[in-house]
Each structure stands twice: as C-alpha cells, then as structure tokens.
Image 1 (cartoon, one colour):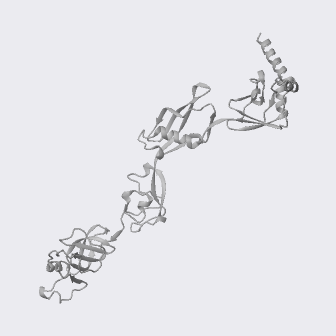
Image 2 (cartoon, rainbow, N blue to C red):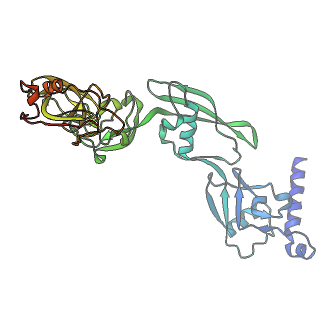
Length: 379
C-alpha cells in the first residue's frame, strides 16, 4: 500500500512538471529553478531548488554545505539529479549555476570568552568579568551552530579550580526546531588580570621615572600583590628600590622624588612674618617635597627640624606659623595694613641659626657668615 501511495505521488509530480509551456498558457504556476538558495537544515530538497515544486517539494536531493558556507551547483548537474528523482520539465532560463548557502549562527571566539567570563564573574574569588582572561583547550576559534539555535548561551553547570585556574562549563541554547536545548561544553583556563604599569628598562632608585620608562600592560593579578600602579601615576615618581625591566609596579614601590638626600648640603630658611633668614646646613635624613626632615646648622652645630620646600632647601617653621611659605624669595613683610606683627624673639632666633655676637645691641652691625637678616618695620 505504501509503495502504491509513493508511486501516485511521483506520478502527480510528473504530471505537474511535464508540460510547463501548456501550464503557463493555462495560468498554472510553472516549476522554475532558483538561481540562489538559502537552507537551514542539513539537506537540500526539491522545494528549495525549484519554485512551484508542488508535491515533489519535500524530496531530498543534496546534502547541505557546511554551516555558514556557500556552494555552487551547475544547472546540468541539478537537472540530472532531479531527473533521477523523477522530477522533469523544470524551467531554467539563462541560469548557469545555482548558489546554495547554509545559514548558521556563529559565535566568535570573543563571544565565547565573554560567556565564560560572565559565568565566572564574582565567583570562586574572581572579580569583574572584564578583568578575567579566558583561554580554551584545543584552540577553540569561531563556533557555528545550526541557525535554529536562536536562544542565549545559558550556563547550567560550572566547575572552577582557583589554584590552577581550570574551568569546565556546560551551556544550553534554546532551539526553535527542537524542544530539547542544544548543549555546549567549554573547558580551559581563566585567570583574573589587572592593568598595571611595567618598567621598559632597568631603573635605579634615585632615577625619576619618565613616560618612556613605563608601559601599561595587563598582567595576572597574582603577579601584582597589593595595589597596582597605573602608568599616569608612576611618571614623575621615584622607585623605593632598584627594579628590572618588565617588572610590574605597585603603588608601594613608588614615592615622590627626593628633593633632599642624606648628608646633602642644603639651604636652611627660617621665616616668620617680618623675619627672613637663610644659612647653610647638612641634611641628616632624606625627604621629598613636603616631608619633615632634620638638618644640622653648620654654623651653630645645632640640629633643626624643617619641611622640604624645594630641591636642596629646608624651611624651619617659626612659632607663629603652621606651614612653610612659598619657595624662598626675599621679602620684608607679609602683613596687611591692619595687622600687627607677632612678637619674635630675635635673639633666640639668631642663636638657633647662627652664632650671635655677645652684645644684642650690636646684632645689626655684626657680620653673619653665610646668612642675611632682614626685619620688617612694624607699623
């Protein structure tokens, strides 16, 4: 019975396709070969190749090209295959070949990496997905699936080893033509990374970092214990220790440039409103701008404490000041018209900075080695 039914279907197809010219005259749709064909399944059927194929449309005649690819079929070959399936009388016009394209859904390698990173985000001790670097086993590149897989990649099982960075993830994708989702398994390595400044050459501790000395790279977080320093933050700074080229820089590795180094000869400035004194001294310790350091007054052999205000310059604060003034410039007064100067023990000041003469009355006449004394006239 089945054989009889199949024979009847084939005969019906022959009757439909046998007399195309007469059918056209009678207003019946004529079976016509298509110049280009798009398919979604793994087989090409008569109905894909021929417009108005009638009951013969479901007959499979070719295996489809690979997912996401296009193949060309000479017309003579197509007609030969159709005749073997008892399909004849097809109008071809001036078509020389038929282009057959198989649609596919393509996941680029980056799409798969993002899917894995998102599945691991803020889990197993990892941070944001944007900072997770993923590499696949077996060199996974772009992946093509049947076009019917229209759903999103949904992680359904996740395994991760924090020590080795190994992952094993299972995904599911909803399929329009099949109630059972398509399953996908990905394995590989995922590690958290950070953006960090990296030295481009060997640098000594005393050198100031220039823009050409530092590059910005992404490194495994395990290589940068502590807070990673950015390139912008490191330029103009000094290292706390000598470091080799290629070494990532942490914020703990850098410091402001030292304006004063230990045992360096420095200019010591003592200033309060109305008084400005300078003398020579020797730094007892190193310091950057704004650091508090000890200096030895070379004249009196007294140890003073001051703030580094410029290269080779330390400012000693007076009793009426809480912060150093600008880099030393000679001035006589900073008082406004309605202000009275704070009382200053000039004799004590001079004894601290220089060796004062025996008689205070002769201070203005005495010669002070390596120092200038200027007192504003109080109003």
